[in-house]
Image (cartoon, rainbow, N blue to C red; front, side, top):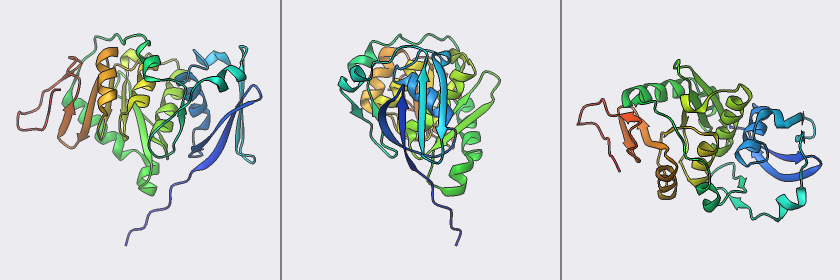
Length: 253
């Protein structure tokens, strides 16, 4: 019998300018990327340079962040928190109404569906922690040259924050990127993609009704069930061209 190792998760407090925001269940990899991505996704920062320093204390299992701008911890704590669904449960400070106020995504770039399926397969083949444990989520970006960059975590939303943090730190242009994820695309996942400005998000599994509604409103293309030679195109915004045979499971909603 081929036994895989168990995936790791650790309770790690995030402390900003002396205020503990929350304790997050995280896989102990690429934590600096996660910090940048989470703080951006939740509106604590607008760009990477807003962070003066990050100190990751591995012994105490804490992340200490110093922002260059003033930080009102009491105001943050007074905001209603929305707990995210799924493994590696997290918290978001954005409601559905907040997300609808985000800028609509603008991009004229289009992709053949066969290209997305190819990159989804490459993503799966290069997800080292999943291949080792069988119990990790992953997120990746595909740039305009076709290069796949992957981040993994016990939580699907944590993995997306990690890849957004990587993109933010490297000043990547979101309009030229594809976001792929192993996890369900729920409204908080869609909000992360929208906040950064990804025009296309693809998943190996489903998107929720609320996420699809938001995607249509914010002009984001959502493709689910990217597996083998099938897909479900939820949004039909014109950014993904069906270049596959009609026998394949492609559904325009």
